Length: 171
Image (cartoon, rainbow, N blue to C red; front, side, top):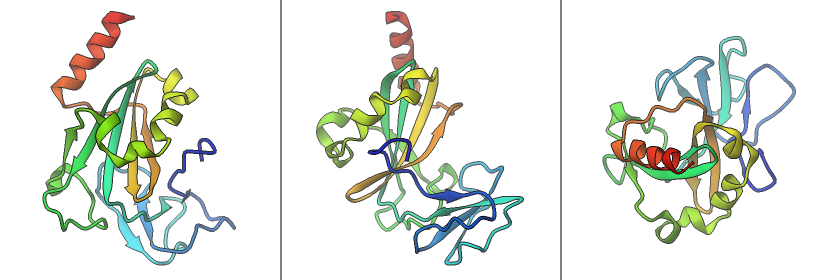
């Protein structure tokens, strides 16, 4: 955990006595991009610790990306899958038809905010200290898991640039 209230996806990167909780596991290369080159296994020892890492598989029902700029929350995106029956075991990537949609008023219309996630992230030293970050959140009702904090996120939605510019202008 990055705090007592922000669960992260359990991950191991080297052969160790550390064990992940029982379940399925995602194996990925240490250097990867997007949803490429991954596999799902039921054996958490089924990875090469010199070239791969192992994370607990979270069968998410939603995925969010929260953008922060200079300590301020800029926006929240919901990753939209191409169909309702899209499997959580498939990578939720652009190449598989997934897209980020801006949540217009996340404070009032999504279950993610019924948790303390925003409050914890808004006040966390990482979001306060970073210049620009994206926090990727996996949602498995009723828990939000921090999947990744990206310190060099790709930004492609024009309205995000406008929001960042307005924050910069206000500073």
